[in-house]
Length: 377
Image: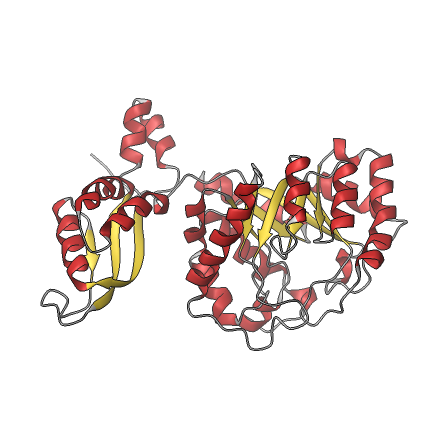
């Protein structure tokens, strides 16, 4: 008899390869994921009940010293358990007092889920002031840049005409439309929409409407429906909507951004915005926490460390840190020298459940993601 330790990525396939039945593979796979759920301000009496329920099924609740003797009114705690444990607790807690019924209703949404296939979203900027010069396109080379990204492996091309970098200038709607209309016309004439999925990076109603009329299938709204008419348009064309979180606006967002708790504050933000989405019956939604948009270095790191939390909403996640200043904050480097840091963050995000990667360097990302996929399945 010989043995070796294996990782817990793609465990269902491991069990199937072993010869297990599909139903058995599903059941056993649910036992291999360990979930950590941080619970803030839980009543001490509720924490003690939850700990006993958790221990009774082989899970665990980490609590501060003194919890068992009710030294505090509320405590923070960490629930540790597999997907199967969370399923069992969701039933047991329905019968318990002190707010545990609410946890019972929510806990299943925090189970580890199988990852979705990765989609590469290549960036194309029609404006002259994008922070990364190589992402800019002029009228004479737009189609060639798009063709190159498609050849390199991009699943989506995200096209915009307004810079959203920190401190960027405000561009009025007519100016934005005049910049991007010739590009949309060119793309439509060449039927690029038959070759790839096109995304419009705009919150301008006129621009979004024109793009959707001309074959674009994704609306990338960095203001997350600050104009609800964008939701109406997205629904009308049955398009995918990307909702991004941003504190304030590009002109002011990096002026001392503050949060009570960056993960929970953005969670509340998405809850609010998704109500608008559901009201308009938009079927396909992608969530983007907005790395670098009104966040400090520590805010960004906290979001990247806990990005899997946002899968609880049941929608795919997008990350776009391509050559952003967060890389310089961690390892001082120019915009031109941030590719390695970009790929490192994006690969880690994919392992944690992100499925949309917005980037400038498509070919390099496709290579890295392909290799990671072969290793982890």
